[in-house]
Length: 348
Image (cartoon, rainbow, N blue to C red):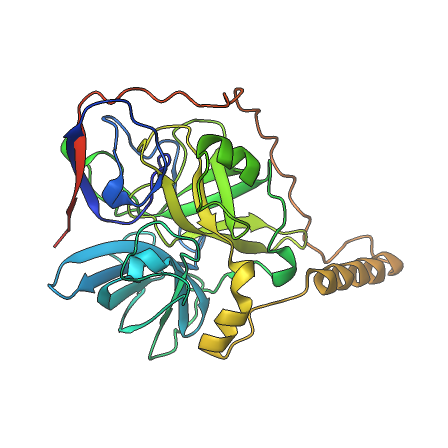
């Protein structure tokens, strides 16, 4: 996936006023995409690797179609970004897929639930950019279709600085004017968490970066990130109990465009458990302490047995993350090669 911008699948064409340009959080309508940007170092997913990933096609009142990502969190619920569902009426959810042309199942729905603090009319970049899609028929789970565990309430403000994270989606592989199209193949790429304080050094005085936000940067290549079409998709981490957990929902990036080192922003689901339960009637929260105690008891029981083998899965070592080059207090952004104004071009 490529670097910062806000990620919805509204394709941007550009021409506007010349002059220096300071990147800020933006949805893709306002995104300037630099020539040559593409998903760099993204890896194709294999079947069953990311069974919670879905693709969502949205249709508005005039029949225009756009796309986002999302994640399965229950047999009747999909988690995504509010800006993906804002001002859209009907939705098609593709499940159990690593290729958009070969989903295991397809579900239609019109049951959207946008967080009440998100202004659907204004749309765009806001805090509380989180939403739920309800499905009228329960999903049939399989090896390729499974729910993901959500960040717990207790973890909602955890510091992910330096932690290796994974983002996935069907975002663009090149710029529109270079013939790029949304990827038919599910891709994933590593990211590295950064503090909100560091994020604010890039987006000075931003009102969007709050405690509900997790910011990430590239892992070891400045082009690594989510890109157009990845909005609403999952950002995940491996927890202490060795379970993959969704810690963010793809929300915003930088107007600097793709293929830049600018951070991108995600919404932390741990802040929204009360709302999730109010809407769905399902309790998604869990206790990390209980999981750790359970793991310790299993380990103790195993060690006390005559067998030296442990039934617990070994927690994989997190790869060492290379240090970033020093970030200036006022990061330099190249002057646009051409003046630009953004325009939305929907895919039909």
